[in-house]
Image (tube, rainbow, N blue to C red; front, side, top):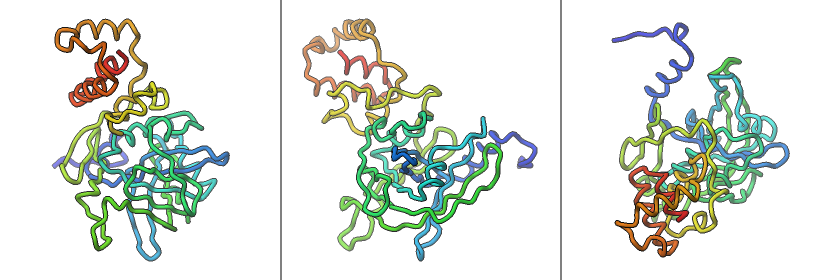
Length: 289
């Protein structure tokens, strides 16, 4: 067995060991508002429930290891003392991942990811309408665990109201775990799906993707593409040029001779097929053809 002294290895390596070994971890998809009322949405896997009477949840936005900066969520919780914790199921996992991109302050991750803002009943931050369970919380306390990069900040939240989708409830009003289909975080690019086991989502680009708000309307409002499809498409750094699209479509002519005259729906179905193989660039060229 190989042994390590936490104080003798770099923080980024220690961080990697901890996250890979203590897994899978539930995800707090935290919605907050800044002092000016701008929405913010970000996922955190240092998270769990710690009490039922009172109902207490704790999540921890850590200081960034690389530059010791803090996250907008922490600033917002300190300023407003309110947060909505949304659970993450498989249907929104790609959009959740996209929200972990480091957007500039004031950017609305709901709009960037294509998720829907739903008004809360008790607190001011919005709920994620697509999340099957949403917890409206007040922030009771924030415990800072250190001042260096990697240090956690325990945000202790009391649930003041919560909402459960009827789609995941049994007849006796208990939650059906299989229908809930939760996703949890593991080390590296790995996640765990409650119904299926481990899968991978590459970390977001170091440069922020274009976001759903910059999609053509027919893609944004597609009746074929799922939320996860939109989340994958949102990661692209720039849309392909018309020259790139035309060249791709011309090469596609033998297999799909009618692609230029296809309907949006037909193109969206074909693009989904390319997305299923991880070919995001080709999917975009089809969507823009």
